[in-house]
Image 1: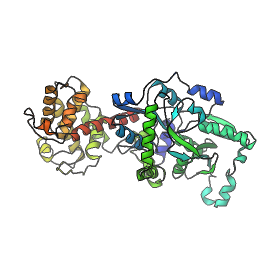
Image 2: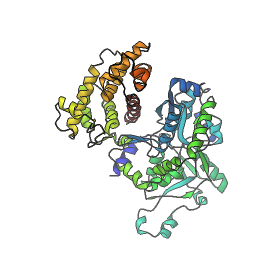
Image 3: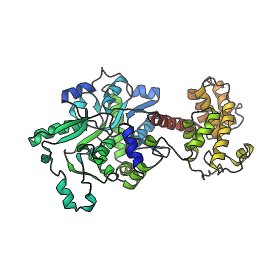
Amino acid sequence: MKTTYLTKSLILPLVCLWALTACGPDRNASKRSERADDPVAYDLPQIVDKGVLRVITTYSPTGYFIYKGKTMGFEYELFKRLADHLKVRLEVVLARNVDSVIPMLNRGEGDIIALGYTITSDRKELVNFTDSYLITHQALIQKKPDNWRKMTLDQIDETLIKDVTELIGDTISVRKNSSYYIRVKQLSNEIGGKVHIDILPGSLSDEEIIQKVAMGEIRYSVIDYNKAAIHKSYFPVIDVGTPVSLSQRIGWAVRKTSPELLKTINEGLAELKSKPDYNVIYRRYFENRKYFNRRLDSEYYTGVTGKFSKYDEMVKKYSKDLGWDWILVKSLIYQESMFRNNRTSWSGAQGLMQLMPGTAEELGVNDLNDPEQNIKAGSLYLKKMHSSWEQIPDSIQRIKFAMASYNCGLGHIKDAQRLAEKYGRNSLSWDDGVDFFVKNLSNPKYFNDPIVKYGYARGSEPYNYVQDIFERYRNYKTIVTSL
């Protein structure tokens, strides 16, 4: 089954979330290619005012990915916590080529580079780095002999580079503009002999480079040890035991015009690293080898296969009649059941789309545990809710009203709309309009208002429901459109 990951990763040149970059013809040319115009003036107050934190990152099996519908990754879990702390929405900006990320940042296309960058003097001229959150070293990636399983450890070692001086006259393949490239150049000076550099495209991820070594397409490369070590469990033919650098610091990068954001990130990282959560998160992505291998082999490792679950074709089928993007419906289903067909909520809602038995009966469903019946009925009920908001002119806002109604009932959302009209908010907009009053339907000031017909509601649930679905949808869409 490993051909799923191996083959697709060759076809799909997504840059690894942890990619630290690659080589160039000379150091000054590398610096020039990263330079951008003066960075835009956009700092924490503007981010909070807009309500969006944009993180420039790339897809990888350790840093940012979607697996069985869930957005995951070491970097993702860290910057998601940061966005939640700032009480802003997270927006992931996917870079296709690691060479472009500093210009993207300085042009204002994102607010943070979360690529696991090595902190170097050259880069510090262009951006400001956060305090380091990881310490690692660079390791030589090389392939063991084809018959290594029949050899003793000593025999294998005799075929491998164990001392960097043995690289004199040989070639190492690395990417443009990378700390790896800089390190290989330094290595030539340190060992007193030329190590040739083969320049790889910036669109190649660390995972793809490791794979190329494993398949014998390139002889040597250099990758950060923490990434190389976890990939060794998937590619046992590679050796990562020869260090080529001392310890190096890994951090995030922000514009030089974002000092307040930098200060806030550093405070957040310090707090997170002081708690057990940090080590738990790290081990989840860099030390759990069985889970790592299972994920890469999975049919539902979305960035490679494009699939979310075994119900994708059913969702596509019934989304057409609903008139919604099937990926949006998929995001809603994950919110309801995490694609677990046998799920039953405390309230008695059942199946993939968590339908109540009474609603299912009205819609002609006799078996809520049948996936197709459940998705068909859920889509019909969504269509009914959508039809109830024909007066909403904006298509996206109308969908949000329909989703909220699906979650907590049409009556409560109508109550919130009346409150919005009474208090001078836009009653035809969910965002910055009706959503505020939905969220506050648990506040006596509002649910006791005479115009409220359905009384108290746990309004934070539909509020978060809509917000979470759309955030997941953006992540889903970002990944799928890259395929």
